[in-house]
Image (spheres, rainbow, N blue to C red):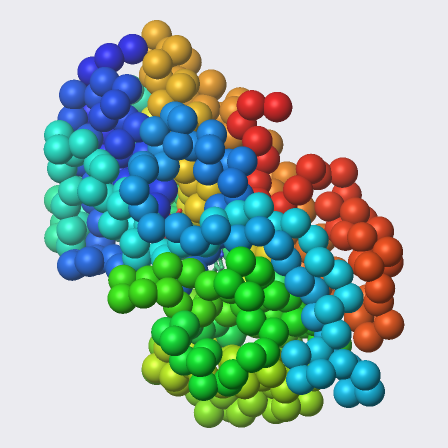
Amino acid sequence: MRGGTVAVVGGSIAGCALASAAARAGADEVVVLERTHGRLADRGLGLCIHDGRAAELAATGALPTGIAAHRLTRRSWVVRDDTAAGPAGRVFWEQPFLFHSYHWGLLWRGLRAATPASVVYRQGAAVTGVAGAGERAEVRLAQGTTEAFDLVVGADGYRSVVREAVCPESRPAYAGYVCWRGNFDARRLESLGDGGWSPESVTTVCFAGGSCVVYRIPGPDGPRVNWVLYAMPPQTGRLPFNDPTSFPPGQVTEELTAHLGALLDREFPPYWAQVIALTDPADTFVQPIYDLETARTTAGRLLLAGDAATVVRPHNTSGAAKALQDATAFEDAWRRAGTWDELLHAYQAARGAAGRELVALARRLGRGQVEQPPVWATMDRREAESWWQGQLGGAADIGGQAMTP
Ligand SMILES: Cc1cc2nc3c(=O)[nH]c(=O)nc-3n(C[C@H](O)[C@H](O)[C@H](O)COP(=O)(O)OP(=O)(O)OC[C@H]3O[C@@H](n4cnc5c(N)ncnc54)[C@H](O)[C@@H]3O)c2cc1C
């Protein structure tokens, strides 16, 4: 099928990838409607993409070449041990971790730069509603105008307006815990001297009631250290975690900052507590963990991709890869389809179940690493390996599923 007009609501990771896919597949007109103004570069920190997924996505063109990425090879699981281990704690397990880490802003810029010139990328275009019955789909913009297209793609993230029309019954569900996130210039590590730092390793610090991953990412001005710490928030009832909005950098409350400090003192090996403490308050933020699954990814002439279709808890390390896989499946469905209906059916068949399986796996990982963790203090390699297999529950690995088995 060739020709046709497509609007993509949201111009982030999924939006750029889906717009590029539509243009490559032969759409006459592709318009991205992104509500923010200026660069989207500051809204995320580090993320990782599994090497197997990245190779597949590079081969299909969904992951452009030349985007800065840092190679990781292993994951060290560490627990505080005041009796025998040194300040970096006891490493109870090392597992292979074949991922590359990315800086969100640099990944977005690479995807945006690779978007074909024919794609019209409109900023300051906030969509307030969509309708997709019949042969056309309509978007309503905040300024009050309505525009019609052959297809509207919802790539508008976890609070998707398009999802409201496709799957109004789906609501983000709070996992009951939050993450503190931060990042800083990796040169600051020099002030700590020799410790447990290894640039190719992801370190997972385990403690009663949570865990924290720390790893190196590329950055616009050189390597950075990125960390994500999952734990219950203070149980004071004062924190509004009834929607997935985060406390952005510089706006984390004193209560949340104090809670993090106490947790580091009490639970962390001293070296890793010092690493986290190298972060400026202005580069720290707190985000409640939510997830969401949808019964369908298409309805009428509407289609969902990326976090608009499925929000997976981050333990799975799969969100960006899944968004780019959605773009690959969309392009593939388009090229094989003779009609819009065939395209929409093929996309739903390829992506519907994949999203739900990722949500289920990430819930198991969240339960095992935050809600009901094992007794880390006594764990050894053998126990850890068998615990991990239980977490996977038959899945091949974290990082998302292979597109070609
Ligand atoms: C703590 C954490 C760690 C993570 N770690 C990883 C990791 O290691 N690996 C990984 O692969 N993924 C990770 N992810 C997930 C990953 O960041 C996302 O899954 C991925 O970026 C896909 O995002 P998206 O483009 O679908 O949505 P978003 O990035 O949310 O983009 C949605 C876009 O739509 C725009 N928009 C929204 N509403 C409207 C509207 N009404 N009108 C117009 N525009 C609109 C927004 O401004 C935004 O630009 C992590 C997520 C979190 C929270």
